[in-house]
Amino acid sequence: MTAPTTSRTTAASAERSSEPKARFSDLFAAEWIKLWSLRSTLWAFAGTVAVILTITIVGAVADTQHYSSSDAAGKAYFRMFGAVGDSFPTGDATMLIVGAGAIGAITVLGEYTTGMIRTTFTAVPARRSAMAAKVAVVVAATTALGVVAALLSFGAAQGILSGQGAAVGFGHHNVVRLLAASAALAPVSALVGMGLATLIRHSVLTIVVTIALLFVIPSVLNARSHSSASILHMTILQAWRRIGYDQATTAMWPWTVGGACIVLAVWALVAAALAVLTPSHRDQ
Image (cartoon, rainbow, N blue to C red; front, side):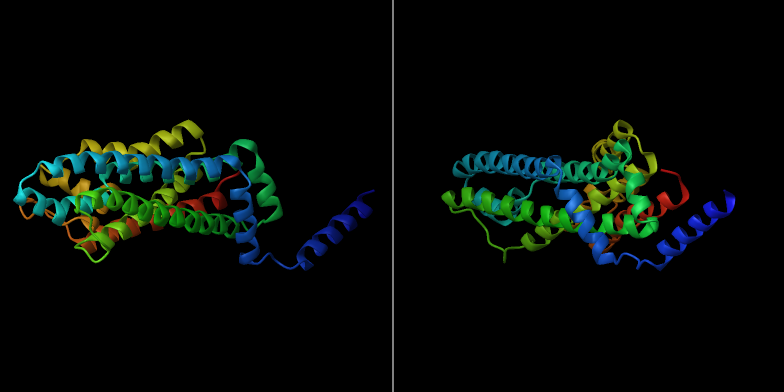
């Protein structure tokens, strides 16, 4: 009995080794189909954009009312700075960060909680390749989410402000930089959610930690001391503010746009590394 069993095992192993390895494009396509086959994905993307547009519209309508009652100096100041801020306000950035972070976490947690991750790693024993494909899909999808959200928010705000003659275009001071920084928030936040989900593997705890890192900590910190300002500069939300808006010249501990870009890049790279490398060193 031992010899035939051993022979069959050897033959099966040889057959598997002779099969061509899955190309990264195949893995990417499989993960893309897997992502969009879930209804929750569409609802998460649509819900995030809907809330962002609501925040934008409410803020722009309120500002048009203030604008109409302002003096000439106030109107000039608003056209220079306020109209740009209405294109993608802090509330939008917060919602995009939380929404994209949750989307990134769910793409990993969905497979771990249902046990589908075992099927994935059985079909693709090269775990790093499988997770790299998942990372690439999430980055592509959430980058599209960020671009769409930023452009729709800009269009909605400027459409409302145009009724008062206060709208600005893409050539206005800081508009393109703000929209680019806003679009980048989505993939960076999604990667953070993925990395934490791969590390923690517990739905509630992952969501709590993700929201704490991306939203709560930046909200409670201030720049009144050097240590607090330094920590604040290392957060994603503050990096977005620095890239998208001109920093006040009165800031005691200013930060550079280049430094803020590095902060976003480090968050993204560390999170992606966690998502790709962690499964190789842990069981499902």
